[in-house]
Image (cartoon, rainbow, N blue to C red; front, side, top):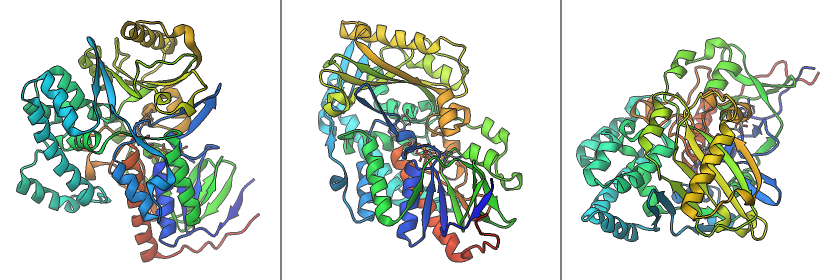
Length: 508
Ligand SMILES: Cc1cc2nc3c(=O)[nH]c(=O)nc-3n(C[C@H](O)[C@H](O)[C@H](O)COP(=O)(O)OP(=O)(O)OC[C@H]3O[C@@H](n4cnc5c(N)ncnc54)[C@H](O)[C@@H]3O)c2cc1C
């Protein structure tokens, strides 16, 4: 049954991840009536949570970084981070497990410089120099550029001036930049991990992204007690206070237009919901190819086939009936060389042997996320996007992780496993319509930075895109920022073009 409803909303936001929640709240603050349509029965997108056997698992993000972004966000809505969440700073920030044992990465620059100095004489001072430049990049990025819609290169003209004036290395490769400062392989792996996990090979990542090292080391790694989903809940509370309406179990099947501009959406059950503007925060490829009429598509299939996607992931949510005090909250297992693993992600597009992996153990910080005496573990293996499963891979890699852990911890955790669930490409495609099952959007390569990212403004007037596939990029803070920018652009559009007339708007 088809029925139309004008819904009385100015803007419909498709998707309730960080980008959708931020877009909706900023638009509401600007005085617009906003409704968010979310296909799942729970808000939060990739940062949803689930409960099983007494464990509470965050489904996606586990690192709370760039705390300044969240502080500003909640202040923009008359609140404060500390009123909304109980945040703790992790110290050590994380542990890197090398072949010869664990290395704790302490919170803060001075203690980390001491660790660097102990591994490579002179590296402590070099770390200070590296971070001084990374701090300038972070401040320029955050204050001058991150809030740009990136419609065209002119917005970044000032960037070039700053680069010239400060002689910052923004566009040399991250790999070369790191090697200018350090030579010890352990130090290089520590410096390169933030760009690797959210993007491309360090050789293909511009040195601009050393701002992530600054964020990691100097601004700290934090954790909201209760889990990362607490951020979602706080953002939903803010949105509701702003008057945003939410509709869950609302799968958008098409974006409607009247030949001149976006006029609303059609849901999978045939209901049409009309509004004067639409912001789409789901997968960009899916939205253009599946929800938009062909004449409004800016990018064809070959454009997407030629993008470098960030890695997909094989995830395991695991409950243990024992504690594992040897693990820290965040653990990176860099006990095998990354070169062959990276080659499978970016070049041969194949399943890796001996991959690096990451383990989060939030119950080390927060006993509330596991039953008493138990441990809540989340494993992540970065994988090439677009990989097909032949069957058996999930068991094989789980076994491999358990064997590697046994080697490092000196005991077998397998008899203690009381819950497991895995999640990989197939689930990323099913749950988020994710192109090639990617986990976190486009890789941060130079060719895919700023105005080289998919455009926020659609060819269809009144439709904007936000989220991790748009500017500024993947990660919780960038997705949230993209929502703010898309809200501004949508407000500008509504100011110039006004409300759309819905001549046919009636129930029936
Ligand atoms: C495993 C994993 C670990 C990560 N770790 C970190 C981390 O530690 N720190 C960090 O900062 N970032 C991390 N990230 C990245 C971060 O989680 C994402 O960049 C961010 O959550 C993306 O938010 P978003 O709003 O752009 O997209 P999403 O969260 O994907 O939200 C899009 C929403 O749109 C909905 N939707 C899609 N299509 C439709 C439709 N047709 N109709 C209705 N609704 C629709 C989806 O259901 C979803 O809720 C991680 C990501 C993953 C997957």
